[in-house]
Amino acid sequence: MINSANETHTYDVAVIGAGSAGLQAAQTLGRMHQSTIVISTDRYRNDPTDHMHNFLGHDGAAPAELRLAARKDAEAYADVRFLDAAGAGVTRVSGELGAFVLDVDGEPTVHAHRVLLATGVRDTLPDVPGIAENFGDLVAHCPFCHGHEYAGTRVGILGAAPHVAAMASMLLPIAPDRVVLAHGAALDEATAAALARTGATVRTEVVTGVRKEGDGLVVTLADGAELALGGLLVKTDWEQATPFAEQLGLEMSEVGAVVVDAFGRTSLPGVYAAGDLAQGPGLPMPMASVLAAAAAGGMAAAACVQDAALARIA
Image (cartoon, rainbow, N blue to C red; front, side, top):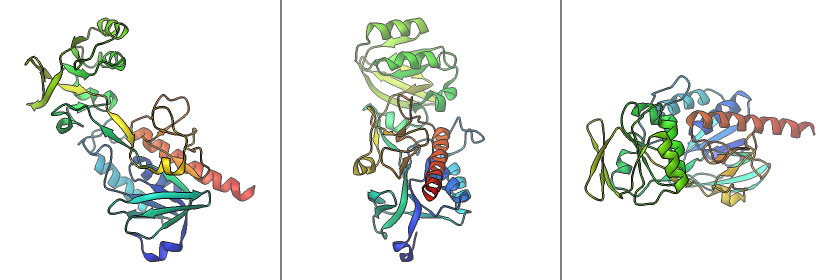
């Protein structure tokens, strides 16, 4: 919490979000003696999973453990303050470079010269009974994060869009037995041919349910058939977790991400973005990775420091 004395204080940087991107940004800013406030909530995209993978030095760790350790590191720097916002957290961001205003539910207004958005995105899962209950473990959306755990089993891939062929090909070295569950949709000829070349099988029936059984899943199809799987890969629909990009009028990509340069700068001077909500140059979409988010947070924080330094000597 922050006290009322901070109501009229203007921070160098306000970081919104305390996942890996926001926490790394906080540590970087603290080390550079930038007065920083980190406004966090208790909601994180990777909450559904018990184990985080493909992260240097933390493979298999619980996401909450990483956040706790990262926050402890950031709190060691005198210039970093945390506001654990209750209720709706930050409700509005307005202003311009040097004079941003953050309205916080139940707290004094926060003022900052710069704002770093690390608020992430919100996933919507396929509407199939049982998927939500098993998401983050036996059901996942990222083969880099969870694919290895399905090694040597039959792995399902839900969907009929062209991406399923690439997914099946990536999974081939991990799980030669792969089945695409088209869920009642038709595959186009190119996708069907590509799947055949990778040796994946296809089931066209609608998936009516998914349940955990033993160490794996059982998928029920509309004709009553059941398939045992070691894991299921699904594609989620996602959207910005907060309205701040819209409030600030930031440029957005075709897929709904905040457009940033290589340093995390957005289209509005003084506003930076890092993590799953942001899309850098040359990328088709945001990189949904804890490690990539942390790296982006550090880069965006460095840009805040550099931009402030250059402004002082201009």
